Amino acid sequence: MHKHYQPEGYRARTSIGYLIKRSHSLMSECLEVAFAQKDFTFMQWVVLMTVRDGLAVTATDICRDYRHDQGALTRVIDQLETRGLLERQRSTEDRRVVQLALTEQGSKTVESLIPVVVERLNTALDGFTVDEVGELTRLLGKLVSRVEVEMQK
Image 1 (cartoon, one colour):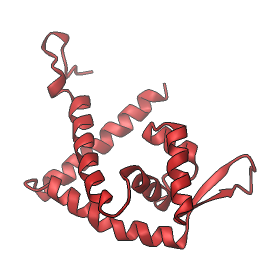
Image 2: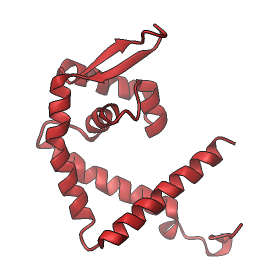
Image 3: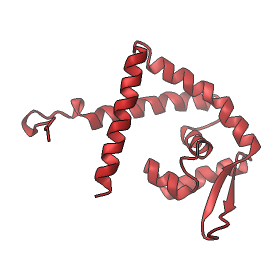
């Protein structure tokens, strides 16, 4: 195994973890500003998109995938449910499980917000070539897969 970092030369600012976290924080902040104009939050967007894309069907799934606090996420889901964008449904296989589903209005809302995200992503990636964005996406996917494997050990 090749060792990409050495203790004696390690600097936080050049570590993959720092750079990923910093880029995530900055992009999240940009999206928070854009969503605030639409009376929305970034976490509300994350919940709606996660449910829309079938990445998670329960609040527990979302908390695990995004490392988000269960209580805070429950408040976000409550807000989305109050606004008529999301609904909780008991699982037919296991009544203890509460699944999340977009309402018709939730689907319309999430679709209306996609252009906001696309515009911010395109702004963030300005100056990158199409090939660079493809490579960045591929490499981040590879990193996520590798870390997921390590987490299962």
